[in-house]
Image 1 (cartoon, one colour):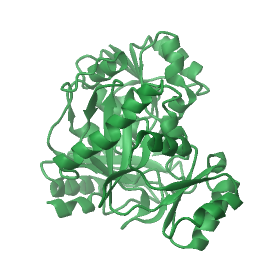
Image 2 (image 1 turned 90 degrees about the horizontal axis):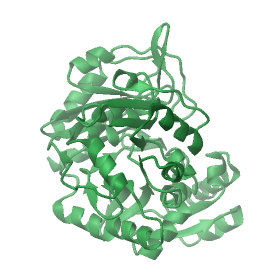
Image 3 (image 1 turned 180 degrees about the horizontal axis):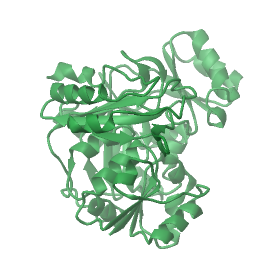
Image 4 (image 1 turned 120 degrees about the vertical axis):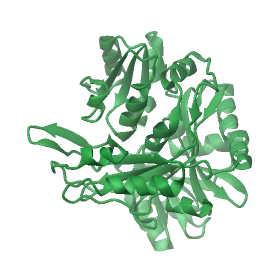
Length: 423
């Protein structure tokens, strides 16, 4: 089949890297893609980013299947546009995509569906925020309602920090219009995990569990980012915990969506806190995670394209995909200034040497120039390696990281270290 992947980041490179290895894929396209994706797919320019524009791209390449990487096109209704035109796209409708597009929608949905999550209040102005904060102790969590590229969450340690964060979000200073409405909620305690499934609206294939690392600094210090790395390890959740997540969270979400007239198809991502009371949802996403996609695609076996097409048709075969049993670690290399305005246009060296050590280097924010490969974003590369155990995967990933250099490069040196206690 002819497959189109929408997007240009590390997640899309990882998806294209895996799709290029699928026997069912005869032609692979990405729009707009990036220099790394160009090594495995044909990159096609994007237009204005509207659903209608993405449909024109799919028509131009005669795509049998389209996969959407980032959340924004899904929230804008690209799936509805494609289905109205008779084109196959794996992903939720605009209504179902509000699970990620609006934190308020998601919290109210979870309440209706009986899905365990943190207690919360909604605020639309400073007075409401001050009143809502009275219901919580500290630390307390403030979340922008709209899409904020992973940067719309603030964990305030004091009442003063909470009030300042509320004002920064509501005023637009922190994340722009996405913060015009807030969810204020209790700060859950426990260990975080990312649980992602592929669903056709009824059946699900559960990917192996992963852990993301949002804060920019070692030891989970500093401001939140889009993700500084992730790892995949079968020991993150045991069999009982996986069953709890499916029965208490994933299946109720899918069943409630269908009951409310918005059947959910595609990737459903539950960001979890494993509390003493069991798993609770921190957030839902409606697409494959980034950087979780990098270690997941590195350890996935089976024909992903066939599984995606089956999910889009409502006929998913849960046994079509499988995990290869290895652990995988992705370390994100970021530009100077990130998660603030990044320094770009900086030459990158060492990728070939890193890959000669057994890693795959997924491009997230790069650009090809006459002078060679340069940085073009905050998160630049995702260095990913696997091994039979987690310590080995960590060692391989960081050996490859040390081979790469660009001025101002920074990265966390403790990706996956939380998982070592299970080995």
